[in-house]
Amino acid sequence: MTTSANQDSQHGDFRQYLPDLTTPRFTTIAQNDAHGHAQELKEKQAPPWLHGLYKHWMKLLREPFKGITNDGTVRPNLFKIRDEGVPIARITASARRVVDQLTPEQASRTLLHIDSPEWRTWSNPEFLLSDKGIRLDAIAPSLREGVLAVLKETLSPEGYEKALGAMRINHFLGELVNAPRVMNEGSYNFVIFGSPSADGAWGFSFYGHHLCLSVFLYRTQIVISPWFTGAEPNFIDSGPYKGTRILEVEERLGLRLMQSLDREARDKATVYKLLKDPAMPHGRWNHDDQRHLCGAYRDNRVVPYEGVLVSSFTREQQDLVMQILEQYLLYLPAQARELRLQDAKEVFAETYFCWIGGHGDDDAFYFRLQSPVIIVEFDHHSGVFLTNAEPAKFHIHTLLRTPNMGDYGWALRSQIEGVEQDYVWEG
Image 1 (cartoon, one colour):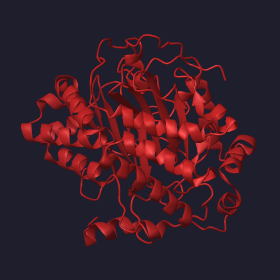
Image 2 (cartoon, rainbow, N blue to C red):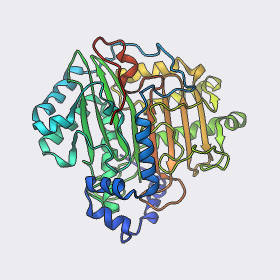
Image 3 (cartoon, rainbow, N blue to C red):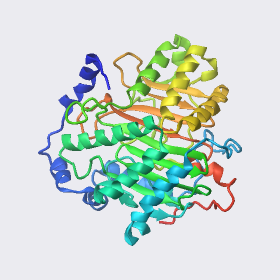
């Protein structure tokens, strides 16, 4: 990977925000593993804002799954069973090799029903709030390699490299803040839903700090949604993976699109001028999600369309939209990605682009592209482990949702014989 000196300098600014590791927060996390760290949150209710968010998430989880919509009404018949060329035989074989290695205790935690509500219990903070499946840093190397092989067979080559980049950056952060047992390259859980098969419906969840992938498979069709990918910082400046950087293409393309708009379109796209704007209604910003709306446990959120219609853009600007969406669909194998891009292009007349913040070269910002078939969000964040009080370009959250019941392959399930739809949390 090649980088410019200017980029390296800009992203290297994170080192001025390294925390004081002698404070109780960091001395405590240094002594904990992932389970102890999560227990701190649940028992001591600290930090209070995150414990409050966790309690709210548990409340949201009790709602039957409906899916994200723009107005509260699910739009039907948007997603169909089709051939997307997914190498299902190879994916299934790699998943079965994992299953064959599981102990009875591991299997009871890892092999869940296809319609288990545990699909929805992923989250992106470093706290292990839902401890299910197997965790990569706590299993034998052969089993860990088997899980990574499932990812490699399922994702596109470039999508797999992006996932590895997120995992390596998470490890780098763990070293920076002396929390290697909580944040490392293997601090991710893996769960299988249904029985791996080339003919039936099944899938898996792979989730942990700053990387969460929900994968649904049916024959040669795939849904990777919802997913979350983040990084703090998004650049490794030392060690064996020095030069690793993720999410900079999405950042660059989004800013380029915003800067290409004329003043009228930019004004229409800008829903708030400040990243934490006094004009925001209560709840529009929160400590964890900050500006993004479609993160963990937000499966049923109503997200109204905002901003400017993509159909009003020039051809060059619409090409930029397609390039942004391609980055967000990067995890998908090539044929599935192209089909999904075509789906998105066909509804440009119902696709909105919105923006929060400034649009200068050095400004932090948020943007969203939203249509009936896809939602993508990009958000620069303030520090969680680093100490920057204001959003910075080295801390990024990105995510993708498929609205109208498309998440978790849900809209396809009613079209598959034998797959139930009774998705209520009773925990």
